[in-house]
Image 1: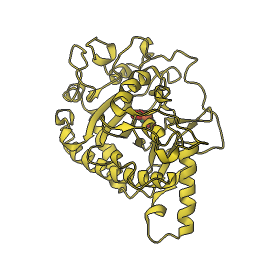
Image 2: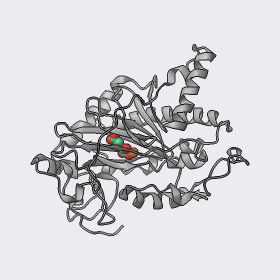
Image 3: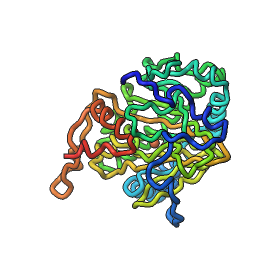
Image 4: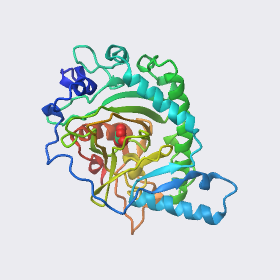
Length: 357
Ligand SMILES: O=C(O)CCC(=O)C(=O)O
Ligand SMILES: [Fe+2]
């Protein structure tokens, strides 16, 4: 990473938003604006995880829920999960503490920033906004707090806010509980693919990588011209997202149409990411998704990314490859994949083509 001085690295979108002026050119989308979301009868699948985990549900119910999960993974790559077992109070508390963090003064927030005062991006972790690698990528209307959560001994606590004072504890607790949910879901995915139970274990084992990203989207006077986060797929294995409790914004691309992901206040949104698309030989889809802003209300989301370790090699499971379903992807290291992924992500393009055979 070189040390150029991008406007967004010095200023935060929150600072740009307070004056209510039109967004600067660097944030404005180049095509014809953010465009309409099609009204459709299609609705994002909702999976009740408790049906799959409880000993008191019948095998018929379990089969039906597994079938729903299979169809969600194959045709959407994104679904909402209820019955996940994370206490509602914890979800509310972690959202609240994150909101309190973004409400702190700019000086206080910048104490946990990976960006120096002169705008040099020292570290992608910490409080920051989009980092600029190329001049031509359009900036997102968002500020972020990005923290490595696992492996635990690699946490950079200097970027973990000490204010609000229960922030660290709540993030730790939330991420521990959400890892367990991720583990359950990944095991069910393994079962659906007919693979050996531990096939994807490195997604949540000791060496797995887990990042938390708090996205803060200030209101924008021209939501028709900017994205909170531009269309992208995620680069990890799977992603778990806690939406704002009141303000919508997330959309997923399904069969060429952008579809809103409605708010279910205590559900988690789970999406497949690129590593899993590769390992499942394209059976599970890593969907394009994006978030839009609005002119009245700030919005926040908390996203946890689960990735294999950088040194791991990923490739389609051999049991999924045969004469009728040929191998779609090469063997690549996670490190190489992510190094191709990131510049593409910033440009709003998919990287997965690079890993195709
Ligand atoms: O804020 C959202 O709803 C989407 C965030 C997201 O997709 C991401 O951080 O990768
Ligand atoms: Fe995402």
